[in-house]
Length: 212
Image (cartoon, rainbow, N blue to C red; front, top):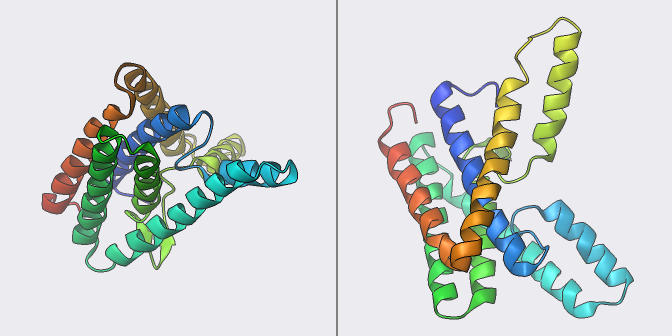
């Protein structure tokens, strides 16, 4: 995050907000299961298996598989020139969120959830570098670790404000989650429509931005 130029930091922040928004929709719809945080879902899967709750375990396993599939397709789409590849990944994410909104409108909420999971996985390929995720956008564990390490470096005489980008990224995801929860309370999964529109907007801006 610290190595990114300012326009890319702004994009990363926007995507963290979008991820928090969508994740809160899925979390509230599923009653405590995430559409982007697979570490938490893996723990829930293990607990469900240990307790013999096979239906819950099967659902969680399905979410994990769909997340891997979304990451797979996102990485394939991300290959090529960086600016165009980013816009393609964002357009793919917007398309998945649009399909999720349509599925929810048609009454197929499990399908909508699956598409949301794939969209969140694909988003992490926006800043793919040498086949690896350069900036975590839909999960904040690594970001919070870097925040703590940057604070330690500041105390030891290093960059006094090096923690700033990590704190802002975390705040973006958290703020997006708050907005998502409030919107879900009014619209339910119809709140996916603004998320899809925002993803497409970011795709267009990224495609035509000189800084992309």
